[in-house]
Image (tube, rainbow, N blue to C red; front, side, top):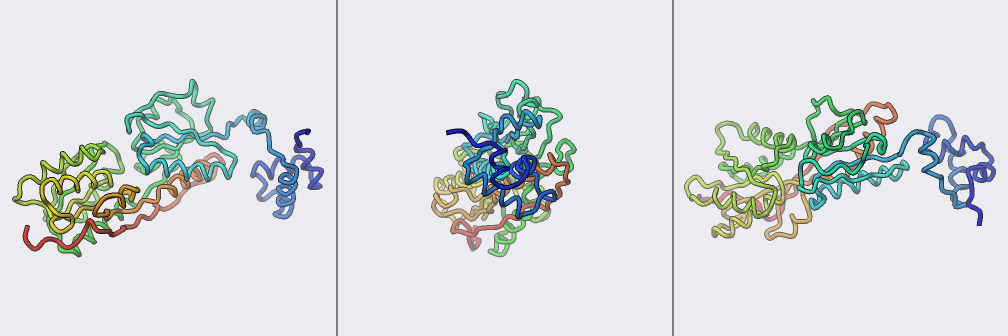
Length: 333
């Protein structure tokens, strides 16, 4: 059976081949009516027509490919970011290539001899920003996720309302009578974690009983750090605010090993709302971060940049999900 061509689609729809190219290339708005675009899509579907993307990309000087630079995909959050980015990309005839760091942060091996020749643009998490140096893609359109908006390197930024997430956590714990806090902070040097620390310090004020302990982004690393921090009963915190659900899981393990009950003796909160948050007992109070929406907006921002359009979207809202790991401060510390 002969494969249908764009000319066949044009004949069936009663339009020119140029119109078919505009509609199927998603460049028709403002040039072709909704009705005509619908006729072209119906004709293409009826004929089983699929555009020759390789030929079109050579003609347009574009691969219609975006690179998503993230830490290792063993972190569920970034797998969800990819899902969101790929969904928007597919709707616009783009593909998304993943560039994960094998160590979770920092550079991975460059999969391209020349990134500029293989890609149309890059979407990168601030937690894997070092990988951009290894990539060698200077000059490519860049969208940064969860990164400093004052940085001039990126054409667009997509951020979550992290400071508001910390505001929601502290308001919840203060309302439960907590006055001595420990911030279990990620040891990863990243803008997103700096924002959380700065927001927490500003919200609790200099007179609040706030200590900070840093830990690797692993359950065992967090458990070890927390066991040391909680070992001395004197000035023991009544609430632990964690930068991540993985850290929160480690904090809960440390509390149990020291004979402390969560939340009766120690409230624990996380960030991300990963599947882990409802897999542990008690289930975690945590800040839900809509990861798929981050990916969707990241890809949408890159498409806007490629079209020469401005991108200026507000921070993506986050929300506190209250579960069993937090409760009233103990009456005796």
